Length: 416
Image (tube, rainbow, N blue to C red; front, side, top):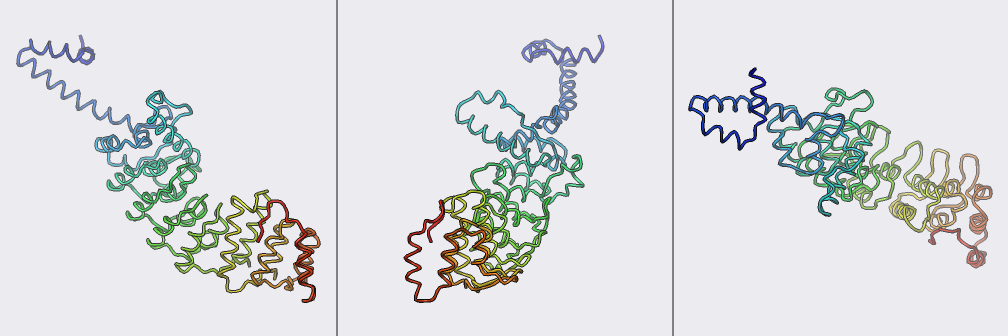
């Protein structure tokens, strides 16, 4: 019998049977058995620890799977037994379309596992190629993120150099970009601790994502920016007036790029010296807020609730702190012009708020038109009557007020 077949038969024997055989062996034979066992251990252990870092039929490698479930001891053990560059490995993780058999456990574990699996699916959909640190961030695993950082994971990788993915599927941004864009991965709590850990370990604040945005700009464009995260980033040297790849400052991005208005974030930026008089293509921030109200109105969002209510708060906030409420854009249009042009039939509440804040209704654009001239075409009867009343003599103001009481504000409009 060949030596290879003998070894195969030996490995197939149950451990209990090997122990019984060993009791009847001579010392010489027992020594050879121990040496063979050590040799098998030396040969098989590297093979055993190669498996956790391999893609198996395109599915999730074991080390990525352990990261997704938050199994820090297993991740640490795999890193101890594998090559040093394992910590910076890239993969195309796929947690699978169907939940595995371990879902048939107790309800608490099932809920925990389902959340991790869902986070992983969402992360893969947005970024098909990730390194281990980025994957840990996407799965919201603070302990594993700290473990990887302590072991020297590259916090500022170069995707074009380190990733073997096909062109176009490289990671979009660093782990810090993944952390600040948390809303993409359905996690309910902003990962302030993860962002803090990445910043403390030297995350480069000048690195841009696929769109050229640094991490602060990327976070301000997320669904719900966190003032805690913004404060951490400003404390670590981010510039409140830094200009992004698109030419926008953080304050402008917080107004134009965010899904929801966050007064805490905007107030923090202003407190740290953000320029409220910044302009982009001739527009002021107040013009942009009115345009956002028009966008919400065009989408059919009620202005008395939801995102519409947030932008009404934004308009009041910037009117309160504006140096000049009669600011004009590059076409010489005032805020009243913008309210009529952007909000159309729903502009009356905005017109009343702007007039009460001191905006002059007599201002004309470069074509010589007042807000009333625009309202005649697109503003609706209520807006026309309101603006005509402002042009009436002072003695007619009381009559104007009595007439306005009989006008119905459009459905969903907010009383100001």
